[in-house]
Amino acid sequence: MITVLIVMTGIMAGIYFAFSVVVMTSLAELSKPQGAKVMNEINDVILNTAFMPLFFISTFWFALLIPWSLVDWQEGQSLLEVCAAVVYIIGMFFVTAFGNVPLNNKLKLSEKDTFSLQQSWDEYLIKWTRLNHIRTLSSIAACAILVLAHV
Image (cartoon, rainbow, N blue to C red; front, top):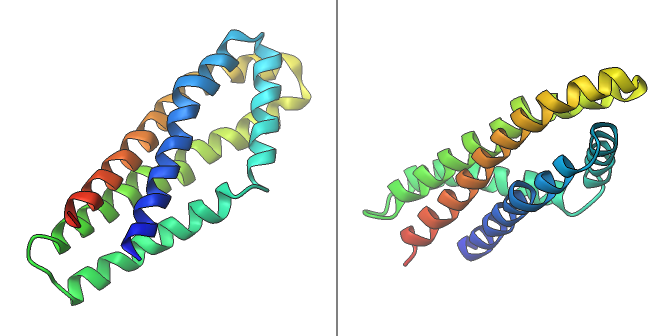
C-alpha cells in the first residue's frame, strides 16, 4: 500500500520536474501571446488526464496517512510518514490550490485580450514557475522521506 503511494508521489514529482525544466523553459522561448495560449491549452487538457485523479488520490492518501500513523505509532517510521504527508499536502496540494490554480484562472481570463494576455504572461511565467519549483521539491522530498520511513 505504501509502495503505491511512493510511486504516485514519484510520478507527481516527475510531472512537476518536467514542467520546471522543460515545459516552462520552452514556453518562455515562444512569443508572449503564443506561450500564454499554449499554457492555457495545457491547463485545459490536464484537467481531463490521469493527472487529476493522481493529484487528488495521492493528496487524500497522504491526509489519511497522518491519523493512521498517529494511531498506529511505529517508532522511527510514523514521524517520517507524518513529515512526508505534511510536506506533500502543504508543498504540493496547497501551493497548487492557492498559488498555481489562481494564476491559471487569471491567465485564462486574460486570453480574450492580446495586450492583457501579454501583460499577464510575464508575471505568470515567473510566479507560476517559482511555485512549480516548490511543488517539485515538495513532491521529491515527500517521496524520499516516505522511502526512508520504509527502508
